[in-house]
Amino acid sequence: MATMQQVADRAGVSIATVSFVVNGTKYVTPKTTARVTAAMRELKFRNNVVARALASRRTRIIALLFPTTGNRFSPTTSEFFMAAAERASERGYHLVLWPVDPAGDDLDDLVSGGLVDGVILMEVRMDDPRVAVLTELQVPFTLIGRTRDSSALPYVDIDFETTIEDSLDHLAALGHRRFGLVLEDLDGTPMAGYAPHQRVQDTFVRSVADRGCTGSIVFADGGSDGGRAAARRLLEVDSDVTAVLVMKDDSSAGLLVGLYAAGRRVPEDVSVLSIASSSANGDQHYPRLSTMVAPGRELGVRAADALIDQLDGTSVELPHFLLPCELRVAESTAVASS
Image (cartoon, rainbow, N blue to C red; front, side, top):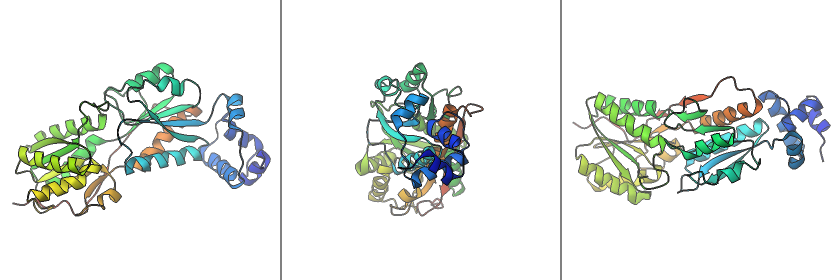
């Protein structure tokens, strides 16, 4: 079994530096931490986690809290999780995925026992009870998302407001004036008040009005059937709609099928733009979907850094990061038909 001295020799640092990284007792730069952890992996160094926790009163484990309700683990979420886990490892931490009740009723049991040093909270709602619980427990945390007022909270989030403005800019430049928005139907579920949906909806309504255009919003149930039903409802609300924004990956294919079933070709008659998704997901459809690509990897890295900076005492100010999606034009958006 490898020793700390062997790890130090491999990494080109002192044994004290290895001890600081292993025990979390002193700040070590991310670059040096990465060298030490790489040497530990190469030498298959195994430190006693229990002994380390007792010595330092820290486990160097952080939890990614994810709601247990529904199937909310999308490819974008997977990308975020992997990036956060890799970043945490580079900085000498372990990240675990930890499902929690959306109401936060089980948070006390999960975090108050000292099993984790801090948490990253995902799928945030506008009025999220879990935030109040974490604040009361005095557990270091970072939000992936924003509550109604997050000014005094650490967060990393997609800039949904800019993303919707950019989406409408793209479609308006193609001559579209009648827009539709398809969102997941969360009414009556524990995820009601989901912050990304509320921000997207509010920005869509405001921006369409500011542009002097027409906008309609419909809500989709899960899967292909939900997408088909959303297409029917949208055409019932506005039979002349020419551009649709959809923020529900599992219903996008059904939406396309529903439009075709109603005699609307994509993109000749109706353009479709997928919001906060991925290029890989867009490429699974016919036609390939133009996509506002979510910055999943950068979100993961920034979230891990924001939390670990708190834990290591290196954060200078409260982290507030907003990252817009990036437009990837494919085959589903085109000039509006006259």
